[in-house]
Length: 134
Ligand SMILES: Nc1ncnc2c1ncn2[C@@H]1O[C@H](COP(=O)(O)OP(=O)(O)OP(=O)(O)O)[C@@H](O)[C@H]1O
Ligand SMILES: [Mg+2]
Image (cartoon, rainbow, N blue to C red; front, side, top):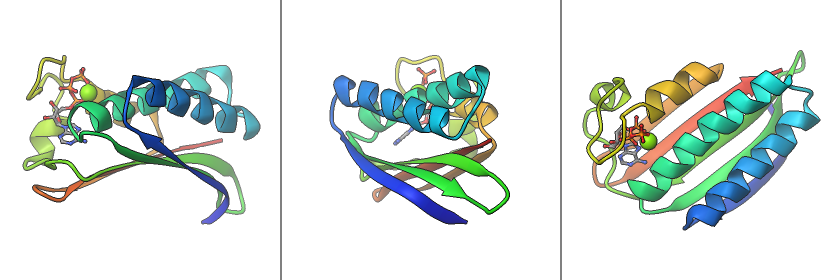
């Protein structure tokens, strides 16, 4: 996989999540995603951006336009150095929340994209990476 274009967006507040949404939309349009697929990846990015803010205490989003020679995609990594997630299976389960949410963000985001990768260590932080392919 090759990275054609990359940008990093620091996320410390709600307005940064809006910026993430807009930037993901722009790349999604650039690679020619359908309106439905644009909305799917933007929605996933919005959920993960909110998690990064609420649970991770902020962090950064790395937005890449990637290609594997056959197709292009938008890849978004959400990186924080917050408390991390002790039980990944539980966190991904629909309806589980440690806060006051609906517990649908992670599972929902996973279903909206093609590739979903969650790496976390308690005390070290969390990295969630999603890719939507054209
Ligand atoms: N970046 C993160 N750092 C630490 N814990 C996280 C992070 N992201 C998610 N979690 C944990 O995973 C749980 C499930 O996340 P998920 O997004 O599915 O639900 P929620 O945020 O609680 O509710 P919703 O997204 O529906 O508003 C969270 O309640 C939290 O405990
Ligand atoms: Mg959430």
